[in-house]
Length: 239
Image 1 (spheres, helix red, strand yellow):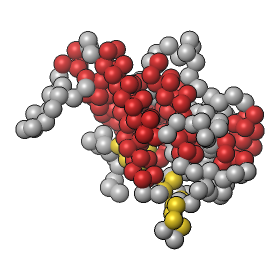
Image 2 (cartoon, rainbow, N blue to C red):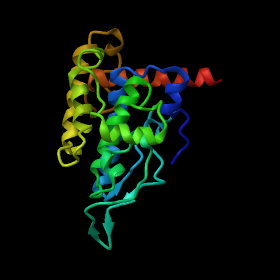
Image 3 (cartoon, rainbow, N blue to C red):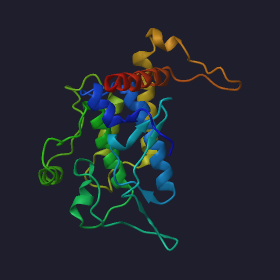
């Protein structure tokens, strides 16, 4: 992997944005993480530690998913395994079925972690992050799934709230699949287009100058501009 000068999303949050990012930035980050996870799962791998600390950004605001130290392969001698049973990951982002160790877990454990990461990017911290690990395990198993409040978190679109809710379903059999999440992510970009397209920044760069390229979504352009600002702001604060 190349040197990622912007650091991790966790680093940027702690340095300059303790309340979390705006939705267009979150949508752009999650889009890249989703692409990485779809690729991993298609090749039989589970990441098992998706979180802001493992989302890296370079100086050109390219986004990469990192740290495969606890990743697992779901292929065994050429055959796809049905589940894994190893207790690995970081408690705040760990899916309930990974904690329980009753029936094993599969690719959907990453979907739960993806949803928790979305909340982390939105609020600046993961749910239950102020508690010790054992308390986190108990709260994850006993409490209702965390999420975005439809009234309190008014700065976020319904599409984003629906995406988080679809990921954070305790029963993995009822949890969303990644191919369906790609459609929900597209809904977020569309809603953000409606929210932000009137702003002046979006009038710049809405078309790519390279031959044969097509117009880009205004929301994605704005998100890229904001993401570049986040990286530069964080770097200047650190010196």
